[in-house]
Length: 301
Ligand SMILES: NC(=O)c1ccc[n+]([C@@H]2O[C@H](COP(=O)([O-])OP(=O)(O)OC[C@H]3O[C@@H](n4cnc5c(N)ncnc54)[C@H](OP(=O)(O)O)[C@@H]3O)[C@@H](O)[C@H]2O)c1
Image (cartoon, rainbow, N blue to C red):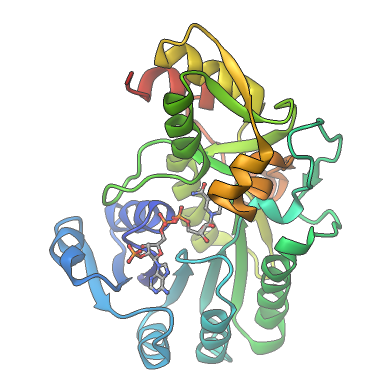
């Protein structure tokens, strides 16, 4: 299959592109940094120079491919509108990458929520996630109305080495860096908030399965475990040689450094269950747990 993938120099998009290239698919990858062209070619990805803002490039690439996987930016509505326009009536597959902070709360680390969401559970997003949730709904409905196969894959916290070009995930690297700086595993509030998590290899396989046999309009949560931020902080602390020492990082300081991201990515609960992926696609994640990965993979300072 000929597949147009966005975000190919990044963590998720690069991993999906490498997985699909290794499976024998013909991968065209959107790249805005010309310095990375040779490196992409070396791992079997054909670079298309451009950005999400380049309407003509997105349209031409969509029209020349059998499927599109969008993994550059979960919140970029303008490019989603362009893809939907280009896919109208084509019957082609469009897989959009979202993120499980759509079901997150504003716990600021103070409590463990008992709200656990499956793929189609109703939820009301917190204000900073309304736009992302609206994009997901828009895509799923557009696929049905406009005659193409639309799916949304929603990962939670992701861990594991990138499969494509060197790139890092979102939450863990920042937690690790801040823990090194503070010489203790860090969390917000009481660290009781929980997030689901998934290994990047398992996530990449999920895209492949969705491409092969995913029904249209489906949402796929991707998850294979769940931990509190306190548990993660303890694990990071042990590995960094801080003897399990943990500290609560000031919420004000965290927001000053990371803005709203600290609230929805470090302070919230985001507990999901990947029911559709397992039941509709037969997805069987095999990656080691996040705590075991932290133990093996983090370097001491
Ligand atoms: N990592 C996680 O744990 C996680 C979990 C759930 C959801 N998400 C969401 O999934 C999306 C991708 O995450 P990621 O971790 O893979 O991010 P990443 O490593 O920063 O990669 C983003 C990729 O998208 C490209 N990109 C961004 N804006 C672009 C634009 N306007 N035009 C063309 N290319 C553009 C980047 O290109 P450059 O190399 O040129 O910057 C890079 O290749 C994000 O929206 C993120 O919030 C991430």
